[in-house]
Amino acid sequence: PTKIPKEMREEIYKAEGNTPAAKERTQRVVVYVLFALVFIGLAFFNAFLTEIRDLTKPEVLEQVAQMQNIPKEEVLEVKLSDIGFGWVESNPITKFVLMNKLG
Image (tube, rainbow, N blue to C red; front, side, top):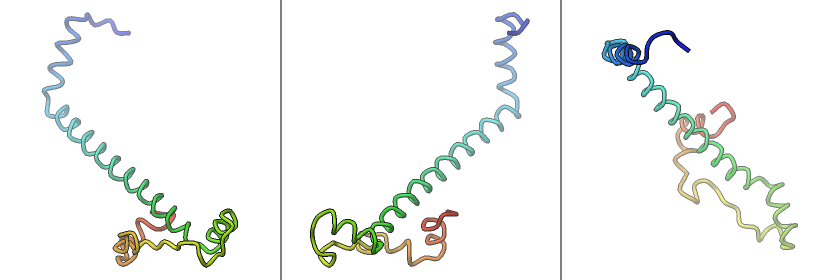
Protein backbone atom coordinates (compact mmCIF):
# COMPACT_ATOMS: atom_id res chain seq x y z
CA PRO A 1 0.00 0.00 0.00
CA THR A 2 1.66 3.11 -1.28
CA LYS A 3 0.37 6.57 -2.11
CA ILE A 4 2.47 6.84 -5.26
CA PRO A 5 0.28 6.69 -8.36
CA LYS A 6 0.67 3.52 -10.43
CA GLU A 7 1.99 5.33 -13.53
CA MET A 8 4.71 7.11 -11.56
CA ARG A 9 5.56 3.99 -9.56
CA GLU A 10 6.39 2.04 -12.72
CA GLU A 11 8.55 4.90 -13.99
CA ILE A 12 10.39 5.13 -10.65
CA TYR A 13 11.02 1.37 -10.54
CA LYS A 14 12.26 1.44 -14.14
CA ALA A 15 14.64 4.33 -13.40
CA GLU A 16 15.89 2.64 -10.21
CA GLY A 17 16.46 -0.58 -12.12
CA ASN A 18 18.94 1.19 -14.41
CA THR A 19 21.16 2.50 -11.62
CA PRO A 20 24.57 0.91 -10.92
CA ALA A 21 23.34 -0.20 -7.48
CA ALA A 22 20.47 -2.15 -9.03
CA LYS A 23 22.76 -3.84 -11.54
CA GLU A 24 25.20 -4.82 -8.78
CA ARG A 25 22.30 -6.12 -6.70
CA THR A 26 21.25 -8.37 -9.58
CA GLN A 27 24.79 -9.73 -9.88
CA ARG A 28 24.97 -10.36 -6.13
CA VAL A 29 21.66 -12.22 -6.15
CA VAL A 30 22.85 -14.43 -9.03
CA VAL A 31 26.10 -15.23 -7.18
CA TYR A 32 24.20 -16.00 -3.95
CA VAL A 33 21.81 -18.31 -5.78
CA LEU A 34 24.70 -20.14 -7.47
CA PHE A 35 26.50 -20.57 -4.14
CA ALA A 36 23.31 -21.86 -2.55
CA LEU A 37 22.76 -24.38 -5.35
CA VAL A 38 26.36 -25.62 -5.17
CA PHE A 39 26.24 -26.08 -1.40
CA ILE A 40 22.82 -27.73 -1.50
CA GLY A 41 24.18 -30.11 -4.14
CA LEU A 42 27.19 -30.86 -1.93
CA ALA A 43 24.88 -31.54 1.01
CA PHE A 44 22.84 -34.04 -1.00
CA PHE A 45 25.99 -35.72 -2.32
CA ASN A 46 27.35 -35.87 1.23
CA ALA A 47 24.12 -37.57 2.39
CA PHE A 48 24.30 -40.01 -0.53
CA LEU A 49 27.90 -41.00 0.25
CA THR A 50 27.12 -41.27 3.96
CA GLU A 51 24.23 -43.60 3.21
CA ILE A 52 26.43 -45.82 1.05
CA ARG A 53 29.16 -45.83 3.69
CA ASP A 54 26.66 -46.70 6.43
CA LEU A 55 25.50 -49.72 4.42
CA THR A 56 28.97 -51.26 4.80
CA LYS A 57 28.97 -51.19 8.62
CA PRO A 58 29.08 -54.68 10.16
CA GLU A 59 25.85 -54.22 12.14
CA VAL A 60 23.97 -53.21 8.99
CA LEU A 61 25.36 -56.16 7.06
CA GLU A 62 24.28 -58.43 9.90
CA GLN A 63 20.74 -57.01 9.82
CA VAL A 64 20.55 -57.50 6.07
CA ALA A 65 21.69 -61.11 6.49
CA GLN A 66 19.04 -61.70 9.15
CA MET A 67 16.28 -60.11 7.05
CA GLN A 68 17.19 -62.24 4.03
CA ASN A 69 17.85 -65.41 6.05
CA ILE A 70 21.31 -65.88 4.59
CA PRO A 71 24.74 -66.22 6.18
CA LYS A 72 26.45 -62.91 6.92
CA GLU A 73 29.38 -63.87 4.68
CA GLU A 74 27.10 -63.96 1.63
CA VAL A 75 25.93 -60.36 2.02
CA LEU A 76 27.55 -58.18 -0.63
CA GLU A 77 29.85 -55.53 0.84
CA VAL A 78 29.94 -52.32 -1.15
CA LYS A 79 32.86 -49.94 -0.86
CA LEU A 80 32.99 -46.46 -2.32
CA SER A 81 35.95 -47.43 -4.49
CA ASP A 82 33.97 -50.38 -5.90
CA ILE A 83 31.30 -48.08 -7.30
CA GLY A 84 33.51 -45.32 -8.69
CA PHE A 85 33.83 -43.02 -5.66
CA GLY A 86 37.33 -43.97 -4.61
CA TRP A 87 38.47 -40.43 -5.45
CA VAL A 88 36.44 -39.15 -2.50
CA GLU A 89 38.40 -41.18 0.03
CA SER A 90 41.80 -40.66 -1.62
CA ASN A 91 41.78 -36.85 -1.46
CA PRO A 92 41.87 -35.30 2.06
CA ILE A 93 39.85 -32.26 1.00
CA THR A 94 37.01 -34.20 -0.64
CA LYS A 95 37.11 -36.71 2.21
CA PHE A 96 36.63 -33.89 4.73
CA VAL A 97 33.96 -32.04 2.75
CA LEU A 98 31.96 -35.07 1.61
CA MET A 99 32.42 -37.67 4.32
CA ASN A 100 31.91 -36.06 7.70
CA LYS A 101 29.10 -34.38 9.56
CA LEU A 102 30.70 -30.94 9.23
CA GLY A 103 30.76 -31.22 5.44
